[in-house]
Amino acid sequence: MINVMNLKTAAFLLATAFVLSNCTFKSSGKEDDSVSGQYEAELTDAPRVPISGNYKYAKKVIVKLEVLEQVMRLADGVEYNFWTFGGKVPGKFIRIREGDEVEFHLSNHPNNKLPHNIDLHSVTGPGGGAEASMTAPGHTSQFSFKAINPGLFVYHCATAPVGMHIANGMYGLILVEPKEGLPPVDKEFYIMQSEFYTKAKFGAAGLTSFDMEKAFNEAPDYVVFNGAVGNHMGDQALNVNVGETVRLYVGNAGPSLASSFHVIGEIFDKVHVEGGTFINENVATTLIPAGGAAIVEFKCETPGSLTLVDHSIFRAFNKGALAQIKVTGKEDESIYSHKQKDMVYQPEGSAVQSITKAPREVAMPEKSMTQRMESGKILYEANCAACHQKNGEGLPGAFPPLANSDYLMSLKDKGISIPLHGLTGIIKVNGKQYDGVMPQIQLTNDEVASIMTYVRNNWNNKGDLVTAAEVEKVRNGK
Image (cartoon, rainbow, N blue to C red; front, top):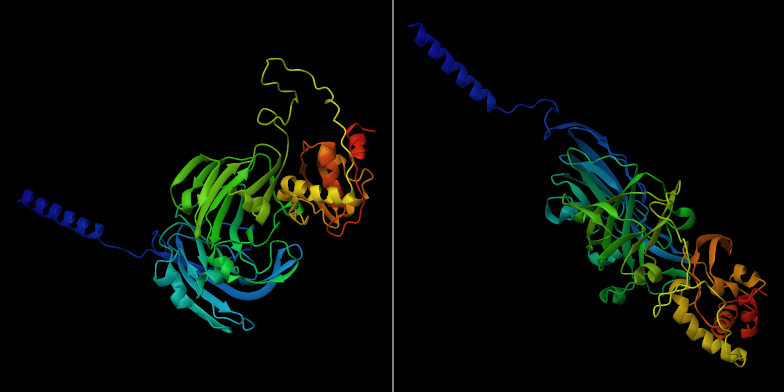
């Protein structure tokens, strides 16, 4: 009888345990899928990134974003009527966590002329929120979504014509951190590539506007990082110390071109491919599609300037897709030595000889001013225009202007030594500081004379004839 009672008791306890194990309890935020508390998201302008909340359980997050239409700088001397999320291009960086419930408020400033909305690629729902957020000037729209998938996502305006709204500056990034968070790094930066299709040519001064025909042909005048040419060059470079780890959140707004994103002088230790959970390692250049993103991480192990580029390289040096990270700290010559020797190379023999003076150049008849200007134009466009641009305007923060150049026109040797011997270090041109490298150009005395005559008598520079004899003197240090 006792054994029967014991068996009944055991059966009852097992059944009770089974029922309890299959019950779901709300535990005041003690489970990953529950929401505990709320806060208003910190939104930041590029290149800043909001600090991670590092919270363990999902929250309700309130995001408030304002659309502003306003004129801002596209390049030095060039202004553009931007349409923006938050008053800057790119728009504000939004950082939330997987599982968060987001209450989104989109406000369209009363002074704006057009309706706008927002399509967040992180949203699971019609139009990524575009349908729910269509907002007339002077109104605010509200909708909510749950952050189901972790990753780095683009957001943009999806009001018709969609390409025009994106091309005018309406885009940004939203990071949905995984529940476990991201590994800590020393520095995080927000970088976004985009294109501008303008009525005026690249660098033409004044206020310019969107050109639909160029957009149809996918032929942008500008391809830039963070909304303008030279935004993070020179004095505006991003600052890092030797030994620090860096994470870049990189977006490509397009609207048309894919980005071949590369940092000159670094290798990415990790790449979150297309902003997702798949991680590739030891990558030099990563492809980011239009409307896509990537997270790249690396450690800075040697001082100097690292240059961010779209490695579709003419976009970098001719359309503005350049930015810099300035790394400060102690040299480690076991990692990078800089130049150690400069020797003569003789491919037909095995001997390496010491450098001697080049044979004397065969004398050529001196050219007239007209001849120098004609040949100088051809030589300049072949050797110099890629950096200093066709009309001598340079690239802000990267290559100093030759047009109306107080620096060039004040040099006693007429600037001849620059193409002959190169130039390094800090210089000031027209009140702005440049710190770069101008390599030595292998040209004859006659060719240098023609280029310098052309440069010194163009683009509001008022100089005089430069002769091959003057170049010869400078070459020989006389």
